[in-house]
Image 1 (tube, rainbow, N blue to C red):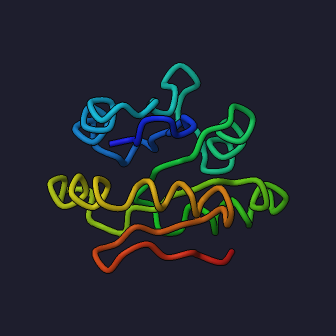
Image 2: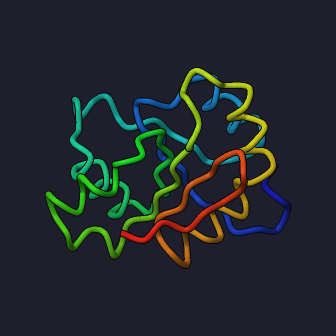
Length: 128
């Protein structure tokens, strides 16, 4: 759960993140939205730009999200705040457990380093 008194950070869920995770994070007090379907299917670059312009941290299962953004528009990487769930999208219970344990630390690291991976072994900073 988001600790009281902490600055609220906005999470933007990529299309590959389960709706169950959305409901779970909302129940824990996080400001979380899905990528807007009104904009149609967005490329990773377009989703990154959308998140940067609106102050979101992206949550995705896509381990190569940042790499595709770097290829399409390298300048976005410096501004991108991304948390990769290094767990199968189908392992929803494991995802929720790891998010409960590690999301706050990952959000703190994303603010400082940009690209972070949450996996069963902990939180890892990813260099682009």
